[in-house]
Amino acid sequence: MLYEKAPAKINLTLDVLHKRPDGFHEVEMIMTTVDLADRIWIRPTDSGRITIKTSERFVPNDRKNLAYQAAELLQRQYGIKEGVEITLEKSIPVAAGLAGGSSDAAATLRGLNRLWNLGIGADELATLGSKIGSDVSFCVHGGTALATGRGEIIKNLPAPPNCWVILAKPAISVSTADIYGNLDLSAVNHPRTSSMIEALEAGDYDKMCKSVGNVLEGVTMDLHPQVVMLKEQMRKFGADAVLMSGSGPTVFGLVKHESRVPRIYNGLKGFCPEVYAVRMVGERNFLD
Image (cartoon, rainbow, N blue to C red; front, side, top):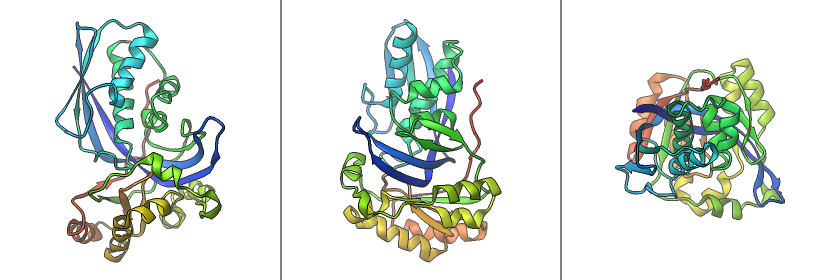
């Protein structure tokens, strides 16, 4: 049996440039991993079938599951007859804008690459992952990166300066398709992606905090006022920078001084059922 860790990601920036002819949106976003992770256990079987086990009732255990799709893709691509049982121990909130499902799929790709001795390099594995979902390519590499195209073109960046990350997910579900469908690109403030890259390259925490931005945030906040309230409370309790991750609804706050963390964490627990205080990871997976 093999074990893989599947860390969550946050978006330090998320920009949408235009709608593409293929129906996807051209994006430019900077993502980094945080120390909140699902655990993936992979066991070979003789059945030839893919089996997903999870205790989380909102997570599908069939072809809708991205980890299932990852295993099926490798089976098909490399003619693998062996079956596999994948157990997902979930810690990342579901449908939260933290790429939990995509990270599970990426961890499954990495684990099966080892289990089946396929010898696939990280870049090729990321390319395969892009067939499953736009965030899977980033999650294969992990760390900190600029993602462009529809999210599958990955350029590694330096890890962010050390800090705490407070994550708060309200008890609502957000449809990514609905958020993108309601996005009016003529009426958004585009984040300063180049400024964020400069901040990461310089290890400048204050500049990083000033450079966060997400064009989807306004759409989600218009539809879900709970996100507005969470942002206001997180600022009130003392976070240095506050932003929604992905299409939401999770809001995160960056906190440099550990002494502030308990006040922010405990304050948010009164408003939100799922709150986490974690550290940045920001370091890349190396498969080659």
